Length: 237
Image (cartoon, rainbow, N blue to C red; front, side):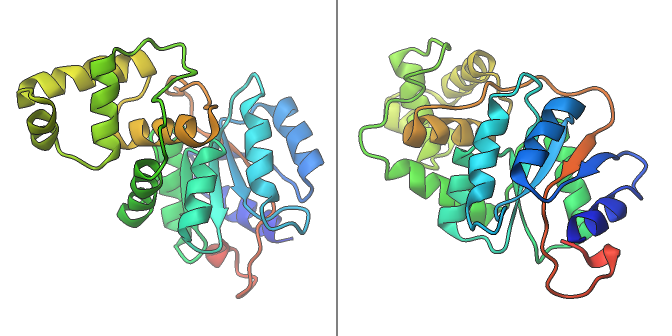
């Protein structure tokens, strides 16, 4: 019922087409393979299991259609935020935020952007900086040079271009050029996306291949959503 309420609320936006709302993970995975949505709004809690959504998100990455996942969280706990992105989510959204913000999140993820606030990004940076002996993109087809990997490491540590240049003995302009080449090789467009992509390799050794921006308006599947307040669709989470 809660998934249906959220789907109904989202469908009021003319730029979003709802493909369906499902309450069981197996049904939802089958529907995703059948409907080929561009964005999947997925709760971290599925089948009455706290972290089932992360497992489903990893399964979605293997689908040929490669939908982008927005992970709904009860709270922005560091471990859950990090696990969401490790599982392949392109955005995380906390239930205490507004429906209007969720619409913006879906639209941004649909355009190939990463959705996370500054606190959630700091969790990613912290997790990545604490990963021992991680080899940036060790399993990636992108061939990064040693210097390019050094630049990625520095970005993951939260350093600015000027700080990276001072750390590696490069000019700030050279650092910018390195970043442009890295973005092109890896298939991302922002530092945030680069950190998320690096995190996936650092902690799991696997990451979804970045997808080109979708041109058509976003379609979406909505997976189980709990609404512990009211049944008003405009306040669904």
